[in-house]
Length: 472
Image 1 (tube, helix red, strand yellow):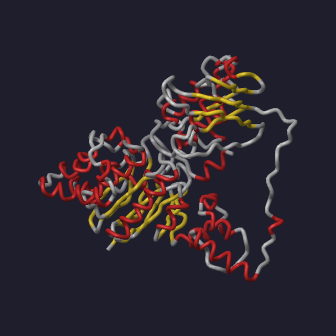
Image 2 (cartoon, helix red, strand yellow; image 1 turned 135 degrees about the horizontal axis):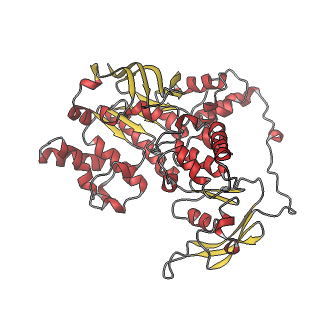
Image 3 (cartoon, helix red, strand yellow; image 1 turned 120 degrees about the horizontal axis):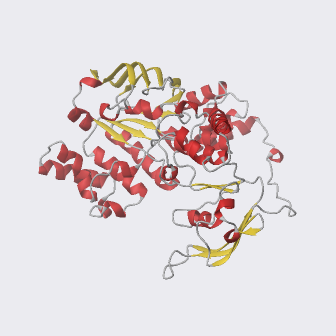
């Protein structure tokens, strides 16, 4: 029996000509683990939200959706709430109580379960998800990974038959994301729950999947087992192939007739088989090319020390490095190691109490803000939504030209040129909302002001591999 059957689904937002979901027809079998992937703005989130009527966006819809043989629109809200679980992108948007234990019980209380039944299910979920150690904590004390795990546990306490997850790791660090996806795989294997997951971390998600769907421009362009989909995208030379796991990409780069690997283990086995009949020439591996010493750095930090308060320990301790023109420099580290704080020093948002930060040979504290942020530095924060000041893309782009001595005609030309160049035309008059296009828009708006140095803070937030690589 199918958990979902979708027949010729079409959807467009109000007052928009663009069709977001274009004739999608598919079915999802019970117990299946399905990964839905695709470029930013292809309609993944819109499609998932159609699978639960209370979350479906307002717009023009055609076609039918059946849940376990029944028309979805005919199921009441209580039945949908208990049988269809939905985990959103942002952990903060789904938590409604102040205590962990109460959050676990909230859904069951809303459905009218008895106190003994609630206690039993809450205890089961706390044990299954390993929540015992922070069972009585305040929700405000939890990390992002713990909050998202709590959302998942709260939904599973209602024992849904289908679990839908819309980019649930978009705000988690790599370790927390890997742990979360591992837990989702455990739910599918041990509880037999149907899982439909949209995810950009395909390295971790695809090995868990029975089936992969690739979406682009509102249509399903590939459907099959993970290795089949990877080979299909490679043959079509589709940009989503560059988001596939590394073993798949290595496999596709070498002519061979062996099975396509999905995991690193599969990749090692493939490499062993391939090397039996082929000589691997290590001289073809590119070596690192060092920058010449006669180039002046664009940004340089020298023995910088920083703490947020006098009594607190140092966050940045003697940091020294330089970034050169045209260079892409990555600052890596675990949570709480000072990455964001270091970038705040480089951008002048914070000032070290010892050491110097130089931009184009000048100490950053001596550069006025009007010069620093007008055409020199651009900063993309962890959550770009915090910087939006207008309701639509169009109004926000015009806001960035405010105060410049440009005619209305020149402003209009600039806005249209950037919108067309960056593929923002279809969302030109749409309101901002939480989706993976948000950083794409903000990144382009930074380029709109022609900054020479860009700082990304945890720039994987809400992004897919293809979009991220395309920017650079």
